[in-house]
Every structure is written in structure tokens, then in C-alpha cells.
Length: 455
Ligand code: TYD
Ligand code: MG
Image (cartoon, rainbow, N blue to C red; front, side, top):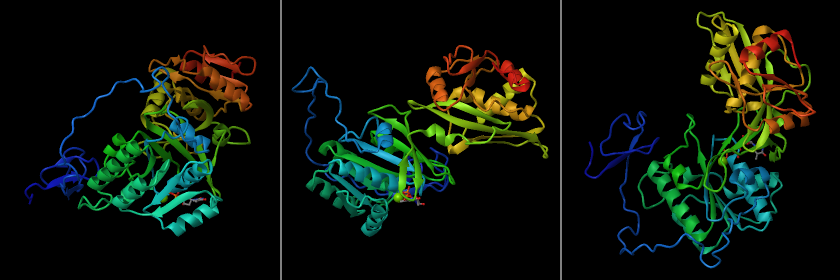
């Protein structure tokens, strides 16, 4: 049924095929191929001009390289994840699940930046101007000099941005835009690619910082083509667990800064508030620490963050025991359990194992191995760790505990929050405030937990 010249683009991975088929051969997705127009971009046949090459040095003041000027949005958590503010002429993709708070965050960013003198526009293809106004009113931002528009036609947006010079423009969302140069519907690969491409070009050419909102599909992919991620200078992921008020902004790609920074926010009636001290948030406050709980002294981006690991090891009633993990890697859990079985004599074969990271945070550091192991051992042996003890360290398959990065900052943060002990690699030095129970082998750590033998 392929017509001459017709092309079929996969709506999930962006691969283009010359024939329709039920399954995309590139990503394996079913029913994702859609015929898309092959319209030539306007101006493609204009007479060619030779590209002019230039030197690396800045023209004018050659000796000092200017650090890129940045727009401070006044929301410190957001600025930090961007690498210290938004770079003019850059394009940022803010991706997140529907309802996580992307529009709220960007309205706040836009309004605060406008209050600080930046010329800002907020263009929504999802909400009417009145709706955005009433939200701004509720958030106490109604006085901010932001230019609002409800618009989905790319051509009109581009015209407006060419007429007036803005510093920061929010497009909410890239999936609602459509360009009349293409036949495909809004949200299709062709449209998303064309609209994002055009806006990124405009951002560079006019020195406007553009933030595009992108919805994420159920399986965690940014809806539409992955290539939007390649077009933009930075990709920020906005995440949150359902049922928790905390939201985490994570840099997934950043041409102008580090990608391991996180910003922590709390959603309330008054919008998104910045959380300056995330440790206090992720710790289970008050009461005795129960068996199965271990406080991990972690590092998220540049900041130390304390978070509780909770484990439950219980006799299994089914033939195949259950393993469930939230907030940590299940492969890593399997490895830690295998090492506990092989090197420390703890058996899990007939027991269900549940592991949970409190507060909805997702931990990816290997330094959390020992915290997870301590939580598991504590539950399996039914002995609680001391109330004022933090845990960190990487576990090798041989059962050795390896030192991890920035042990000093981890211990300093622990001391700041009132913790006075640490179960950690032997080389960690807690200074006068934290007494470290140094362990070289996982078996030693398990023995100390079982015997309640603390330094
Ligand atoms: P929204 O920013 O519209 O999400 P997104 O743009 O990512 O789809 O936020 C939606 C949710 O946030 C909605 O469920 C209500 C909640 N919310 C608050 O709890 N407090 C507030 O002040 C606002 C504006 C929204
Ligand atoms: Mg929205």
C-alpha cells in the first residue's frame, strides 16, 4: 500500500521506513508507524551561499573568554540544575509525566525571572490565557510582567518572537505545536521535530532562551522523537512519585553545566516551594528506628542528602519468593542479596524481600550498597541499627567494602543532622563529631549489626 515517495515514521523512536509495517524494525514497537508528509522545508531550494568559517577566539577582546551571561530566574533550585541560570540563546527541554507540575514550575520560573528584569513570554498550547492567569493569581504571581499567549501555530509564534525580542520564552508544550509546512498532526514525529528544530534555530539566532515542555509517555520516554533531546542544549527531567509532595528536577543533559545536579521542590497549595535542606525531608522523623531501616548518607549532584532505606525480609507464603524494590535498582538488590547469601550466611531463598527508599527519591549511587545491605541484614536478624547511625560504602562481589567518593561531606552532613555514628569503609574519618565503625568486609558489618557491637 506504499505510495510513491510516502514515508512512514515510527512515533516512538523516530525511525523512518519506506514501507508500512505493523512493527517498527528499529525499536520493536507495535503499530507505531504513521505515514508522514515529505514536504520540503521552506527555503530549501534557495540559492546556496558558502559557509563562512571563523576562528575559535572571541572577536574583539581575545584575551579573556567571557563566561556565558546567564539569566537568573530567582528560583535557586532551578538555576543550579541549569548550571547557574539559563544561558541566553539556549534551548532547554523540560520533560515529565502529565500532572507532575511542569506548567506550575515554569510559570513560577518565568514570573520570577520577569520580576528580576528579564523580558519573558509564556506560550501555552494547553491552557487558555484566563486559566493561566487564574493560576498565576493563586500563586501570587499576578503582578509579574510576563507576556502570556495561548497559541499552537508555530508560524504565529515564530512571527511574534521575531517582532519582539524576549530573553526567555516558555513553550508549553512542544507536543501541541503544529507547523503548516507539514501535513502530519500535532504531536507526530514530523511536527515535533519540525517545531523543535525551528524554535531551537530561532533561539540561537536571536539569543532568546527557549524552554520547551515535553510530556513523557507511560514507559518513561519523552513522547515524540528522541531527536528533540539531541537538538536542545539541556534536558531536565521533572520527577515525582504519586502520593508524595516532593518533586525532583534532574539534569539529564547539559551543554552548559554538570548533569548530576538535582533541585528539590515541594508541591503545595501555593505552588512549588524550594526545599533547601532535602535531608530533613527524606528522613523518617521521630520515634525509634525500627529493624530494617538504615539511613544512607548519599550525594545527589553537589549536595549530600540523607535518606532512609527500609527493608522487610519475611517468610514467603508462595513457592517463588517475591522481590520488590522502590527507588533503587533491582539488579543491584539482587547482587547485594547474593553477596549476603554467599559471604555472610544470610539466606533469602524462602523469604520475600522488599526494599524501599523513603520519600520517593531514586538512588543510583553504588555507595548505597552498604545501606541496602544493612537494612536487609537488620530486618533479617531483627536487630535495629542505632538511631544516630548513618551507612555508606560500595560492596564488591567478593564481599569487600570499598571506599566511596566524598566521604567527608557525607559525614559532615550527617553530623549537621545530629548523627554521631557511621557504618562505613575503614578509611572514612568522621572527625570529632562522628565515630566511624570502619568495616573492610560485608561479613563484619553484618556481624556488628547482629551483635549490636558499635564503636
Ligand atoms: P501542572 O503544573 O499543571 O502539571 P503539568 O504541567 O506537568 O501537567 O500541575 C498539575 C498538578 O499540580 C495538579 O494535579 C494540581 C497540582 N497543583 C498543586 O498542588 N498546587 C498548585 O498550586 C498548583 C498550581 C498545582
Ligand atoms: Mg501542563
